[in-house]
Length: 65
Image (cartoon, rainbow, N blue to C red; front, side, top):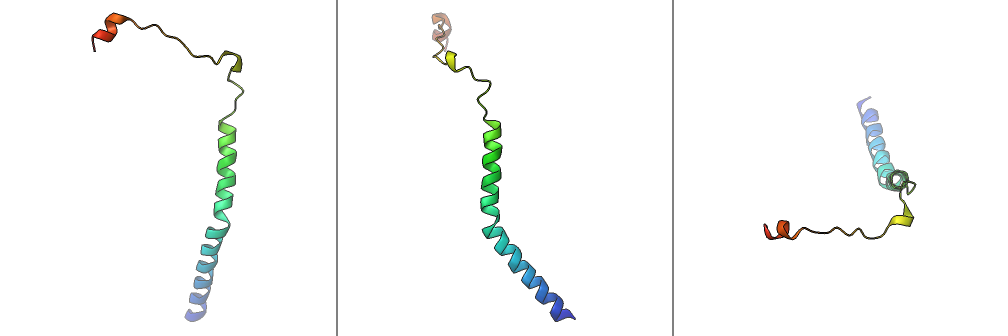
């Protein structure tokens, strides 16, 4: 019975390897794209107020460096 059991272990290992090389990369890419799109929603961004922010610098603080 030992040779029959080892044969199925080998077949299972080969099948697992094939599935991991063929099926997993597209699945991982699809899931990661969905997670990225869900995390980068633009609902909270105010596109009317995207101008540069001008901050005045204190001269005495810049000379201390």
